[in-house]
Image (cartoon, rainbow, N blue to C red; front, side, top):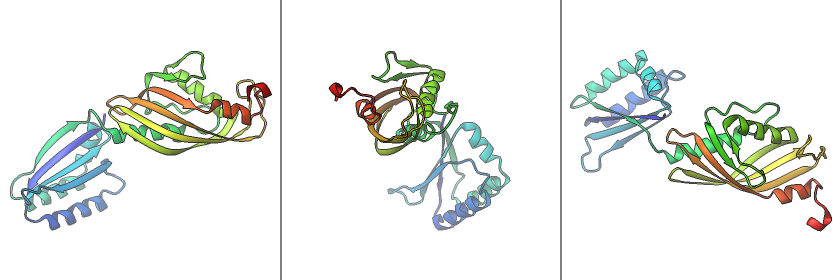
Length: 235
């Protein structure tokens, strides 16, 4: 679960503190585990400074705190403050930006050759996939991996993300699929045909950022037409 540490202090020496943080970033390059940080100044009280630091997990935050460089910088930070800084540890229970990043990660990982990746950091174990092209919903992480392998076996392909909108625990992604038909796909022998297809996917995410459910809408008919798999009466 994503973890956030809130650090509050009072200081009239913000410029010195910013230089101190720049030095910490340089000294811990390749070591620090923080993924994002924001320093903010209270509009109502210029001496009230708040730093928000994001980590992949509480354990990573503790590893970051254990760095010798972090301890040295903290001691210098205390010297710049009017009073001892306070720390608040927060487990993130909702992060729409994180949900969007997870959805993007799926569209980046799905293309490729051979076996599908584990997707353990993308989907929950009992993920539920709704695809109108399938007779039955795909349920479970292993089943979803097999579904991806069907597409990997049939095409060399990639996704281009055109738009993405996040609201609550849902992420809507509008995408374009580009590929070359290289292998058997749903009984259609390889044609070598270059194909393109547009679609939209809505993902529902869990608080820790993994995908729990997905709904797909895409131009399957147009894809079949490009593969020459439709009877003229179906066009």
